Image (cartoon, rainbow, N blue to C red):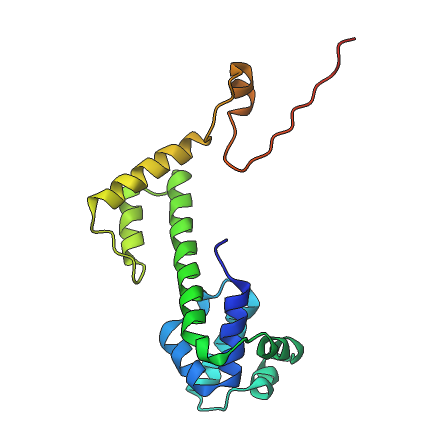
Length: 179
């Protein structure tokens, strides 16, 4: 999965509870690093309040947001504020995975050339593609994904109609009985 609801909630809840957690998060994350749109909005409001030198808590954020219930849920979901750096790392890592996945989907769909895709992946902060082995792995992965199947059936007619089966996929085949 390319997002962690729990990490996003814990990050935002920690920011509502602790100013140091907020400062740490501001250094590490942008609103678009959050997957959930409501989390992007809430974090955007926090940033706006921060830049206006306004205190950030459930009251000030709910005043802008218009709702307090979910904010209270966020503060209650925090296991411990001391783990804010870990929550930030999880949210950032998931954000990077989504960006890479989006780029690879464009390549797979033929909307983006592989060399351009590699450059876009290199542009993602903390992602470096300096190594030829990474390029080889990426080429092989894309070649395999374009085939669309991990396993072929031993019955060639099924492959012709269904194209094989991917890992973790369940395929049920039914048919009419002879009359």
